[in-house]
Length: 119
Image (cartoon, rainbow, N blue to C red):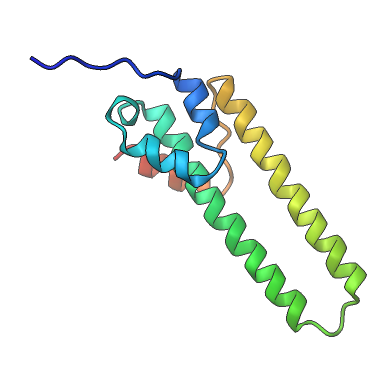
């Protein structure tokens, strides 16, 4: 007879923690006491995809900044700051909604996260 262990964290807290980096998200997808919660799986997958898209976006913008000789350095610096602010606002919004037990389905990656969380 197997006894199901009760998770140490509430599902809302675990969902919010999964947005800290991709490492807790991966851990929550692997730990048996957490991986059965579909809402937590959604937040974990969205966190992983969000990290990947933010990283890729920053790489592309950085490459454009290095290759661009037409734009001044001030324009590129402000563009990078706006991109950082954009990622920060999305990140905080996802954490707040996860703590409330609700989903903030991001435009492109939200659908992917939803499909992956159903598996």
